[in-house]
Structures are given as C-alpha cells and as structure tokens.
Length: 238
Image (cartoon, rainbow, N blue to C red; front, side, top):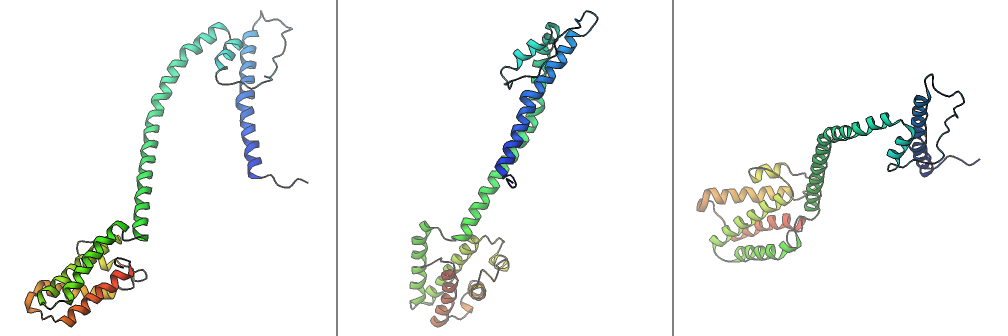
C-alpha cells in the first residue's frame, strides 16, 4: 500500500484534472456540438463519421482557429462579431472590482507598514541616532541638579519632565496630558511607573507654585533620581 497522498501530489492531481477539463473536455464538447449542428437536417449524410475527442490539449492562442474549423461560416462570423462586445463588457464590469481590490491591497499594505513601525518603536524606544543628543541633555540636567543654585535645580526637574513626556510618546501612550498618558501605561511593562508619577507631581508643584514651593538640593537630587530610574528602564539614557 502506498499510503496517503501528500499535499503536492493532491495539488498536482487537482490541477491535472482541471487542465483536462479546460483544454481537452470542453473543446471536445464544443466540437461535438458544432459538428452535430452542421450535420443535422434532412440533407445530412447517414454515414457521417462520429466526432472523436481531441487527442491533444488546446491552447488559448489556437482557440479561434479551433472554432473556425468546427463551426460553420455563419456561426463563426457571429461569434467573431460578438467577441469584441463581450470583451468590452467584461472589461467594464471588471474595472470596479479591480479598483476595489487595488484599494484594499493598498490599505492593507499601509496598515501593515504602520504596525511594523509601531512594533519597532515599542521594541527599541530610542533610536540609535538620538542617544548622543539625549545623553547631552541628561548630562546638562545632572549638572544643574548638582549645582548650588535653586534656579538650576528647578530647571533640571522641568527639563527631566520634558524628557519623560517624550519617552511616553515613544512608548505609544496617547493623551492630551502626561497624566492621561501614564494612566494608559501597563504596570507589567512599566515597572517604574510609580517613580514617574511621583516625579511628575513634584514637577507640577514646582511649575504651578513657583518659589512658594520650597526646594533644597537633597530633594532635587532625589527627584532627578526618580526620573533616572524611569529612563534607565527603557534604555533612554546609558
């Protein structure tokens, strides 16, 4: 026993069957019908030879010659005249479907390209070309936080918060405010979300209250450390 046929064998048998139908069986049936019509009637000879099936496949280029050989002159002339009308109608009917198929194909292509970009952004939040610029900004933040001026401490926290907002955008979090963006964060993939919340709340008090919010160097460094924890989790700084 040979066992079950493979997928390739099954496909080969299927295509072979359809090929026999299209290129042998259909032309043979057409030949039989046309010969029966041509040989019918009272003037038909009784000893007309039976029409035999085609012994070879019929290609598309040979089909007009085949029709001319098996049909009468009037029948073939009618087919030839109606063929152009049939082609025009077929093209007219097919064009809307072709346009819809092309539109759907283009939409799927652009959607897939957008998904690939989003996936790449999620897997690598910071592009390699942005790392030097980010590192320079972070170095400036640290320099201001370690300085002795309260004004520099406030600027360091404000700049670090701007960097945090950019990082949230890179993570694909949407919202009008940073609070809306952080509410969308998944704690399973954002381990330092609590640090981000605390640092952002202190930044808001500094921005809204101004000098009324007391700030010392120790507190400034602690807040910068919260931002650093978030940035290091996502590879935003080295």
